[in-house]
Length: 376
Picture (cartoon, rainbow, N blue to C red):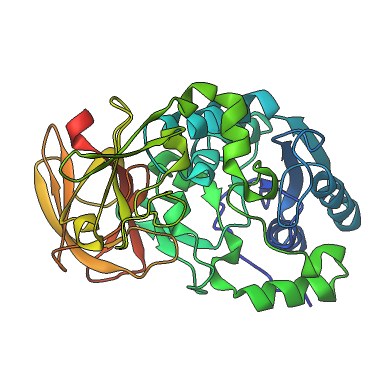
């Protein structure tokens, strides 16, 4: 039996109409099934984000080829209207091009954050509004509940599946319209529901973050989009001594050890990438450690004032890393985070730093992008 859910929609004239973002995977398929079985008027929408002909189908991809076919089959089984929207140009402009630019800036980007922020929660948000929907439903593992300043975001029950790190750019306005029915389920529970109602996608592999990168080789994408990122430069020591020539800063990330082409007898790591001089600086593991993180494009969805404040928070710097204590310092002109541990290694510009409430670490307060303040 499919569990009944309450999407907390108050429409005096009807149960409520919802648009479900259906990627063709098991999570969004079950989200649609939960909405339909709970009595909501349900419409499925699938976004075609890239051409599966030019980007070969690979295990764990999404939003192209077979995935669109799977979404159609699920919608047919659930007997709900389903539409496929061609968002290839939008996705390329807002996600893929930015992905390439980030590497050219010496950063390590997270394209799925941009996909959520600038495509799924922006353009699709408008489509759902145009369809007179009361809510946009997604299959993300996250929860939201009414709070003092509107709906607040919380981590999922299944912490192993929690996707708050990738949703930190969600705004207050978007939160008020979004619903996340999977937040109170575990992944095995979702697969079991899918199997019980006969969805063929019940055991479909999870999608990967960089869905548009064939075989995980991002350099093949970058060489086509930004060949200028392959300008030759120098690999230098921390003291500035020349060690070798390289074929482009896009081939390196902070913390990288393998593939440096250096034989110096001691382990060396990439500790700095300068997009202006094209120098790649290497040093010891100790040189990777940072105490202060500088943030840009910060999104704050906490209840209290943000500017000119200092907060004790928990932060997450990588999607697979644990929460750690930190001081969040916000001024009119800058935002920074000082880690309680004093130092962390391998932190790269382009990564996200996501904030959580210090007392209730399941509450998401927002986040920002880590950047190199020397280049600002």
